[in-house]
Image (cartoon, rainbow, N blue to C red; front, side, top):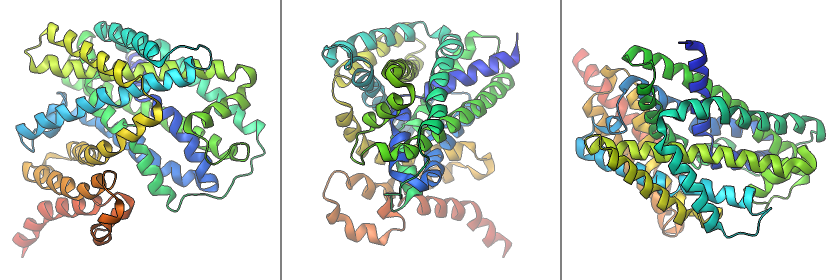
Length: 425
């Protein structure tokens, strides 16, 4: 057993499972709009697209259970509802979005075929990989991910030599906040709680069967994946900033990435990009479908039939939603993200806390307050924002769609230290 090799393979697998459609098309456009403030945007983006997702992996290493364990301290009922919402959204939005992006970037430029055909073939292959889940880590970690990394590094590296290096002024009023919110669209916090379980369960088919062995492997793999994501995200954001003078401000996310690829890789750019998109998107879809099927199998007494049915249903949903345009899927995702992402973040953070600071009362109080103060953010994308001006103005950071942050921190402090302060008096 080669432990170092296993850690690197698991790290590459995690990187690949995280790195999907949103991770690929979001950073270059951020850089294009951020200009000279590209590094500030990167700081915000990595907060929700790297730090929180990797903390989710660390939480899995600590809990070594399922997604259900993330919310069970709130209540069993809450945790079940949370699981169904997370897995339901995962198979309904980010998983199908990978097929839509693959069609628009890797199929449509070469073949005049309908998106539904791409979606059918795409999720048929996803289903096959999910059924052969015992080989996920070795197949993804040792083969697919290195190809993704090499193509990306090639695009990023050439960017430094084919541009003038002149950066535009930023179009963002709050680059850091915009980076944070754009990180929501990667779905990586949700991916962390979903695919972390995939890696954990896949280790049951390996030589890593003890609690400590799994924890060590997962933590080290998490650091490797996080470092890889930081390198790629930072590079893609900077590439977008460097190419700002050659791209218009109203260019779509896919057009920005396509333009950068064409200018860095010449006539072969589109071909390289199509390979990259197909691999990055596919591995994420496999992780989501596998994680969802694992959860259904777990609540059905480890039924293999339940696993197959869940994987098939997830694939069918992917086929239907994946046949829509990328922009339509992204628009559909925003309200759901504003509702679920804050709760997911606080659960990840609390599950990384020492037990003495993460009692059931703390979980319940922080999650409840986060839910309440996230409602204005959620409603802001459903009803006219002017109807919420009064509420938004009365909640700190609410105008930035982060009104839940300070109340959650305050409740955490009051529950943990309020009682101790009174006793000391």
